[in-house]
Each structure stands twice: as C-alpha cells, then as structure tokens.
Length: 108
Image 1 (cartoon, one colour):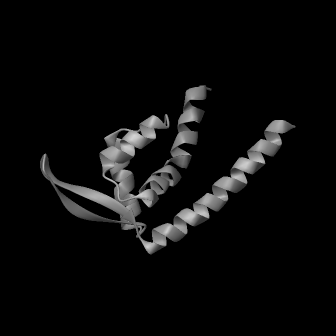
Image 2 (cartoon, rainbow, N blue to C red):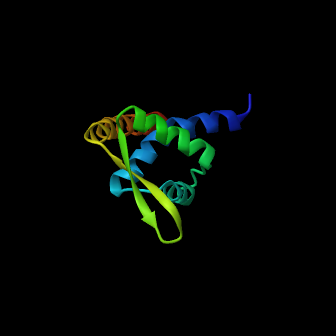
Image 3 (cartoon, rainbow, N blue to C red):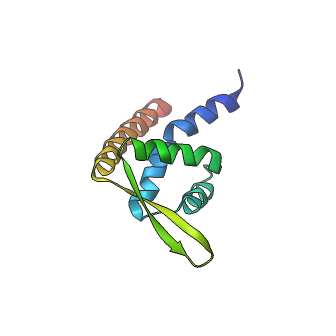
C-alpha cells in the first residue's frame, strides 16, 4: 500500500471545505482559489477545480456572476448562496469534531 494514495484521499476529502471557506471570505475567481490552495500547500489544478465548482453550483451551494476584465474575456466569480453558507457551517462543525477526535487519539 502506498502512503501517497492515502494522502491524496485525505486531501480530496477536505477540498470542498477549503474551497467553500475561501469563497466565503469574498467572491473568488478560480485562479485566486487555486493560488490560495497552493499557498496552503493543497495544490490543485484547474482540471480538478472546475468540475468541483460546477458540482457545488449545481447543488445550489454556489452562484456566480460574470465580471468584465481589462486584460481579457469576462471572468466568472463565485460566491456562496444561503444554502452554501449553511452547508459550510455544518462542514465547519464536522471539521472541528474530526480535528478534536484525531487530537485525542494522537495524544494517547
């Protein structure tokens, strides 16, 4: 068994939470989301991010609007819907519970 496979699964499991958290701070353009994830060492490529954004939008958690760009075509900026805010709050609770449980187990 390769540790890389488990590491990848752990990252995938937390990715939605991290993306929603980034977008909750301000409307975000996908390259801004990727940059913030890279800064946190959660490297994600566009081929991973765009399908995830589409899935979250189709689930009613995100909305987007087009903003004109002075350096090219209009950009799609994402924001949380009310349902997305509620969903993120539930994920925050779950993350806190999981983090605390792992800390308890790790200290034994």
